[in-house]
Image (cartoon, rainbow, N blue to C red; front, side):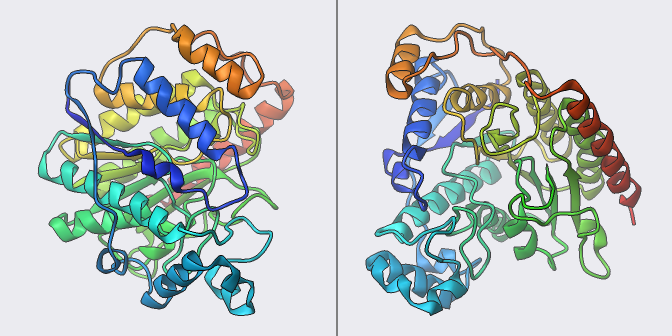
Length: 385
């Protein structure tokens, strides 16, 4: 059983850069489930504290002027009503809103990711699990976006490079395109970015077509596999097998950073991919085997998005147990189920892997997988160029 480190502290719950008041509730229920399943005090699993990222650390990724703006609006969000705030991504009524203390909260998230990177680099074979709010993959070097103020994924990658990694691979399997990480490292040949995501007009962020590739000389360092709405296990796992795995193996990274957003699950209320619990378990097993095979098991998992409170914790448990190299039974603790039912006002799942399956029409899902496989083939054809 490998060592697994989890950078976490209750103060991470302060990160909520939107009007989504249920965000802390979802994360709290998910974290509590990990504890009640006995995963947080399992042998060779360590929950560790961390220091918030300071300005010098954050400025390795983010523009100093942007940091100053975030700190200013963090002290007094009323200042963000000015037009100049829009250039930094803070627009009234949009996804990322200015909140008091947002700088400190986002710096904590980044500090957790940096600590995970340090542990993974110093201890080959060690894996890190960073539950949300880790996974702020939409933040740009000089702009907030998609609920993301600072980009902890990018900062973890930069930390690995600064510690001595010659190459780092970043694989984003969230339902949304990993745009922030892609563009931060777009011109850096030491970083491979691969994103498998939903892609359709009107779906955030609207980027990540197959044609988005790296710059002249290193086109293969940026890879995108767009999937249409209603694509499920067939297309999603094909993207991993036919694009992600061969690309990462060919790149031969010293470490692997992944974003495993739970929002690809078919029951997520804000996305349209139709991946099942069974498909997710297979995905997580493949990612762990990939890291073991190419970079001595150096694997950092940021859990990222997920908006269904009855499935988020269960999906985190499947990710964590995959990192631990174990498979646990299906029984969910009665105490957790009662707490979930009371908090949500609806029945809680009865088992860990309970999954009634997608509810969309069969023809829609078959068409989603058909088109998804065509896009997988398009991305596959570009490998090695």
